[in-house]
Amino acid sequence: MAVNESISAYSTTAANNTPAGSNTIGPDLDNHLRDIKKNIRLAVESSQGPSAPADGFVGRWYADTSGSASDILALNIHDGGGFVHLFDLETSANEIVSANLAASAIETSQINLGGIGDSAIPASGIDFSDLSGSAIDRAAINIADSGIARAKIDIADSAIARAKIDINASGIARTNLDLSLGTGVDDMITLISGSATTIAALPVVSGEFLTNLDNIGAFVRFDASSGTPSAQTSLNITSITDNGAGDYTFNFTKSFASATSYGWALGGSTQTNDVRFAWQSTPDSPTAGAFRAAWAASDQSLADGTFHSAMFFGDQ
Amino acid sequence: MNVIAYTAADGSLRVVVPMAKEKKADENEADFVARIRAKDVPSDATDVVELNRSEIPQDREFRNAWKRGAATEIEVDLEKAKTIQEQRIHNAKLRKARELLEREMVGEDITLEKAKLQAIDKTIVRTATSIDDLKALWPISLPRTK
Image 1 (cartoon, rainbow over the protein chains, first blue to last red):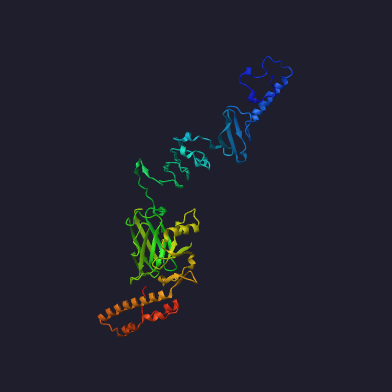
Image 2: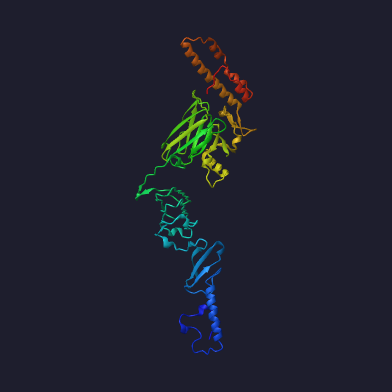
């Protein structure tokens, strides 16, 4: 007749427990009663704590309090082999802040935050970092609530073949869509409409938002009145080569498709409004990656100026 | 932001000015200038050197006479500058001569101005001993191109 048993030795079948029924229990009855009380107490205490109880069994719950300093209570369940983490509860907010989901669990599912105010969404948002990138075939995230002032979606895994982001709620006052694409991403952005073969038109965009467009050509405004040319603004120009008075080469960051696939417009003047006219300079023919131009005064001698501009348009 | 100076195959001194806007977020300035140097300085360039912008002469009047110097990184070649100035005086005399001819054709008396123009000796620039001398030797009666 065993005494000092742990709760894991107990059976849900009464006949399988001790004492066996035929035992003379006289001197040990006291110990059996103590075992039962001890195990009731241990069962309650072991359901929570900073470390998992040693005597787990299938279906036993355990709340890990090791993260209590951060208001995190981690809920676990024993699967027969050990405790499995299910999710983290933020006790101060009464919210689940992360869950241990298998990648396949959201392979084709849609996470819909419609109707949830942004205050209900934890700062961490939806974190896919615990998922295997290759397991995510396609993720659709719809953010439809008009109360969300700003939505940020980070898709960081280079193995994701395609990401689709729909931001379609008319009530969203402003949408900042920041795409940070790492190495290995071949197709930067594809616009599709209805089917994958139809290219959608770009929306109407006010001129003030036409920034950082790298494929419309190149331009530069520069001052060459003293020292070396100094650019006030430019696009797609890595450098200006100062070849001499009124003689400059513009080196493109992204080359055009060929030496003959683009056109140009050049102009300039001096601080005192004396005209400078400009042309493609002949010493070096234009190439896909660079263009040499000359600026001259009224007597056709090459001359510098203060307000010079060069613009290039074509296929890149 | 540094610039890159080099001597081209034709002997002229050229200066590559990187556009600061093209510096990548994860790139420091030295790496950026090195990338521009590899991309935009031709393979036949010689005497390639990175310079601070402050080392580039501010006066571009004799820009085509710039050369790599001994005392300073870039200096003006006085002999080249004299040739440039001589040619400028010659061109200015031609423009003035055309103007006088037009005025004579419409009946103006240009005798004195014509004599003054003919008296201008462009080779006077050969006596210059410095760039400042050379600038000062420009004939007062001869208008300069703006």
